[in-house]
Every structure is written in structure tokens, then in C-alpha cells.
Amino acid sequence: MPKIGKVLRVAAFLLILLGLKVGPSRAQLQIGAPATVTLRVVDSYGKFLEYKVESFYAKDQPNVNLAAQFEGLTFKHAVQGKMYEFRLAPVSHGMEYPAFKQFIAVGEASTLAVFSVPKAVLLPDRDTPWPVTKFVIKPVPRGEDVWVNARPAYAPDISGTDTSETAGVTQDGTFNLHGSHGGLYIVAIYQGSRILKLDIVDIPQFAPSKPIEVKLN
Image (cartoon, rainbow, N blue to C red; front, side, top):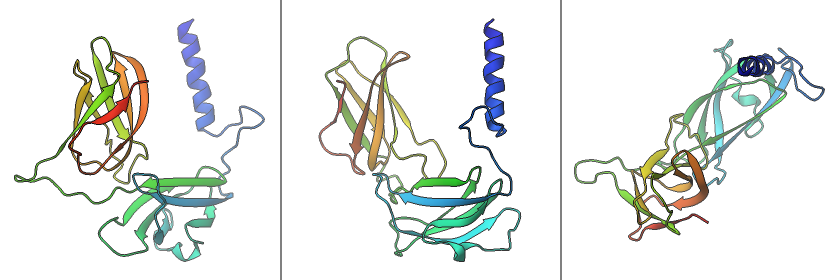
């Protein structure tokens, strides 16, 4: 019986993935139908950044740059079923935020894509290794096997990589994260496989002298 239930769940997922109608309100993928693409760029605190579209190509038309057809960061001439490659650059020139390339697949009439762009950070070297940021959970969790996972609240960023960190929690409720940060993070507190709490924590780019407090209650 459990196997039958699993097969049914997989079949339902495949129907949705293929764009077949499984209910009266389910939107269908209409290959070739017009669509709108809206792009947004935020920093690690969720603040909208001013970016412009430098290039925008359909994968089947790599020699046709559609960037001039954008209204700000909105493209009203997209086609459902197509994939596009584009390059965005900050309106103001500088080293704080980078230009970047990305892909987007258009699978419905209106597509919104939000990209998180972290500030440039100083890479570690022999004299300035990765900093350690100290935290303390209050009140102190009871029991053993307590650990945390911290990930950017606005993720994934333009690198497309997993930038989450995991650390064990000591008996006095403290833990350390390594590397450069800067932004809002979702800190999940676990005990074994059970989630005790999710907390949104502001982790500055440079570690403060005192531990950052993470609330358990």
C-alpha cells in the first residue's frame, strides 16, 4: 500500500511538471504564447538595487539582442517555453556590486526572477584569514545534539552555490560561524533531527566584539 501511494504522488508530480491540467485553476504551459518577464535585483538585506539589462538573448536566437525592448527590468515580448540568457549591470559604476550573467526559463504568462547580489568582500590571505563570528542562543537549549544551520535570507545569490553554514552548539549555547557575511540570515536551531526554532539574524560583514544573540523563544 505505501508503494502505491508513492507511485500516485510521483505520477501527480509528473503531470504538473508536464503542464497537464489537473484541476480547474491549474495554469498550463502554452508553448509559443506571449509572456512577460520581470527581473529584480536585491542586496543581502533585501534592498532593491538599480540594475540595467545589457544583453538579453533567446537561446535559439543567440545573435538577436533583445535588451532594447526592456521597459526598465520588464520584458513584455517573451515567449512561453523559451530559455533566455542575459547580463545585468549596476546603473552606477563601481566595485560594490558586480555585473552578472544568468539564465531564465519562461514557463508561464508572467515570470518574476529575483537575484541576490552580495557586496564585494575581502578575500582571506595569510595575514587576514577568514574571520570568526561568535553567537549565543538565549535561553540556552537543553539537552544534547544541538546544532544550527545559517543561510542567507535572500538566496540563492548570483553564484548559484550553497552558501549555508552548519555548526555545533556548545552546552553554554554558543557557536561560531566562519567566513565573511553581511546581511540577513535565517538561523535554524536543531536538536537531532527536530527543528527547535527559526530566527532571522542580522550578521554584519565584520564580526562584532560581542557574541550575536539568537533567540530560541
